[in-house]
Amino acid sequence: MYFWVINIYGMLNGFLFVYQTKNKLIIAGKNKKFIIPFYNRICAFEIIRKWHSYTNSIEPDFIDKKGDLVYNFSKTRKHRIKGADIVMYNTYMPEFLELNMLYLDTLKLSQGEIIFDLGAYCGLAACLFSKTIGKNGRVVSVEPDILNYYVLEKNIRDHELVNVKAINAVVWSRDTDIEVPHKDEKTYKLPAITPLELTRRLRLKRVDVVKMDIEGSEYHVFETIDEFIERYSPRFVIKVYHNKDGKIDLGYFYDIFSKHGYEMEIIKQPQKEKFPLIYAYK
Image (tube, rainbow, N blue to C red; front, side, top):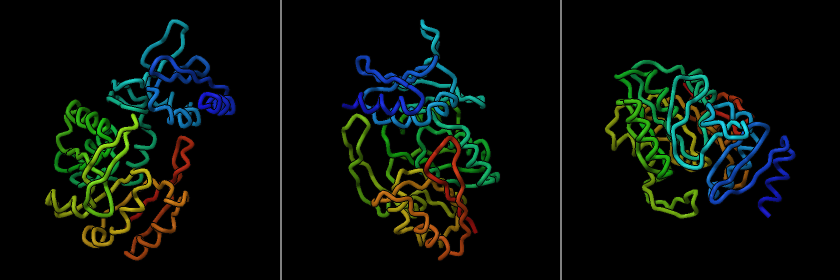
């Protein structure tokens, strides 16, 4: 049933064809193939929907015997990011340089700033932030997915990002432990932490910027965000996902930010992304 659905979806989005080889899923288009592990098959819909964005965001890993460009995400390996002299390890999917450059253009970072990178994935944003804020700045990158976290740490070491600290945790509305699902359908327990508690544990006197891409958990985090905003007044850039009712509720964030005297702008994302960015600042 899955292959019927995914192949119909592929046909509707440019006649892409999806098939399985052992434990891999191959998405084939004209002269290009994108390979992911079968346990990550849910991502095939996203890859098909943004096929050109994904295949144009990185250099191909190799050319196969048929002359097709192959983008191999069947396991963790290094990929060269198009448009930047950056080679990084990636896990499940590529990171978009265009989106991360949008973060930089929006935030207008300064030397020495302290940044919370919440939802760090494999570290492209952390790398760009690190180089922009300089040795006197600091990036705190929080990533819940255990494989992403290991790769994030590896990228930090490989790129000698001495001003970046990686933390394996869930950003949440309260400090507790949470069962987190993994792509291979297993679950594991992780500490959950609020932004305020994060500042306390790291003994930070200020936080200048919060970048947040945490796939719907932003609604939970903002249930208890008031004291953090009152104390530190950072600039925010937030990728807003669906809430528990399946809606993108921008008004929820507007009400909280306006209460604290913030301006809030809605920024359309590149790459056919349906989830908007919020930029909030004083």
